[in-house]
Image (cartoon, rainbow, N blue to C red):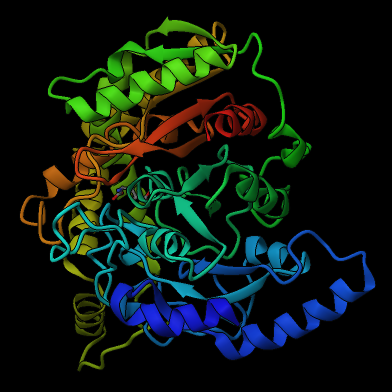
Length: 452
Ligand code: GLN
């Protein structure tokens, strides 16, 4: 009830939710009360969560923040949300995002921008972005509209908004959480994960969300660890890599200072700090912005006005396709589809797409080699704290540069987590990123818990 009231009070300003499901939530909470009365209730019984509006929810509108799916009501439940419901979670609503999860500031949603609940010191007027694409989830958790929320991360969409809003966000290993029933952006990169106010809350959510799913061909049949127990693990002797290539030119002093502080905290906790090199990291962003749009152009071909979603009538079939897609997709989505179609087209495929896939293998190999020497790596999550609404909007490349630190782990499929790590000069949250070996979410949680 407290969370439903908080949504009523604050969602008008924050716009963190596209759809609020208070009635369902209060009914589900009553059922949870009964379960809790019996004493053997599951971990998430009665816990109010926000669900990114990219997860299909049975009977509840799922829009991907696009006009294309404005009125789409899925007849089935995604595996991740089904797992959370099985464990007693209560869904308070569907959270806002960048359209089809494409963006870093939650400013491409057809349902309006999300506002970051944080303000710069001495500047209460300026509305800041919450980061993206899971900006609604991050803002909802930070402002107390939900105790936790699901996110999806293709190139940073859980970690970067977590950093901008001062919460914890974990992108699991590719294949750890099922993609079934999550609206696809770039299938070889998309991964669902938890966002919450503490590392342990993320661990509890991940315990429920993770696991093999035969309905997703890239889901991996690997045992699910005890994530909650991992949070109290000791860090004695843990080797923490500091990748030298992340020290990019022009890194703001406050970001560098928070990174150094993180290194000191881990050293104090008993970790050994090791200098490592990821030489192909500098190609991460360029290859990501070939591979992700390529896969997006293919995935979004299904929105043709015929099977589901928006349809704009026209005299011929071709005109119907054109009008439907022109009206249904926003500018950023259209830009990605055009880039993707270009890099996949005959004549350019070898030069761009194939080349990018080869570089991707090298990026992954760098990580594999570095993880022979270290257990986790520590880097900043983003090159700046949250910026103002309206900034960086005219130049897509400026916007893409936000992802410089998060994209490499995505390209390599490694798990990575963002943690709150102090405040910027103007009082905004900064985030630090931990990157781990495949399926070693446990070490991230242990190190993260020690940094809290
Ligand atoms: N900001 C990146 C992009 O726009 C990442 C998005 C994401 O992880 N979904 O593609």
